[in-house]
Every structure is written in C-alpha cells, then in structure tokens.
Length: 109
Image 1 (spheres, rainbow, N blue to C red):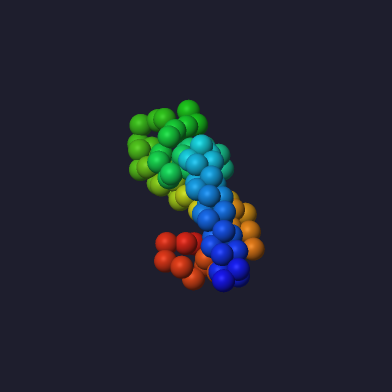
Image 2 (image 1 turned 90 degrees about the vertical axis):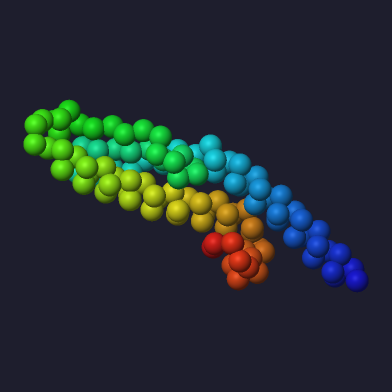
C-alpha cells in the first residue's frame, strides 16, 4: 500500500502544480503579428483578444479587406504561440508525471 499512497501524493502534488500553472497562464499576454508587423494582436492566456494595433499606413480608404485579413492572420499567429506556451507550462508543471497525464482526457501535452 505504500506505493499507492506515494503515487496518490505525487498525483495530488502534480494536480496542485497544474492548477498553479493555469493561474500563471491566465496572467500571460501573447502577441501575434502579420503583414511584417503592420498588425499586432495581443491575447490573454485564456485566448481572449485583448488589443489590436494597426500601422497607420493601413488606415486608408479601400484597405478594409487587407486590414481584416491581417487581423485574422495576426490572431492565428498569437493563438499558435499561446497554445505552445500552454503546452510548455503544463509540461513543466507535470514534470515526471507528464507521460502518464498525456493519455488522460482533458490533458494536452
């Protein structure tokens, strides 16, 4: 039974580490860019769009479609970076248990 007790303690410690990592992730801001930096978007750790910055050269009549496309591309860039950061933080929090958790529902590594 000692092994089971030890395993349960490890699982509880890992669960706390994962909860701590999720709390830290909520405070993270990730930027994505498009158009060579002409559009920058900022996402929160939860994936919410926080900020959009447009280069003033884009703000001309007839550029609406280009701006829209660049915002979507910048958002996709930020989302990809956010997912990588989430995976990294969860992997670090799980430590040696990461291999076991990868097969559990709701856990991405």
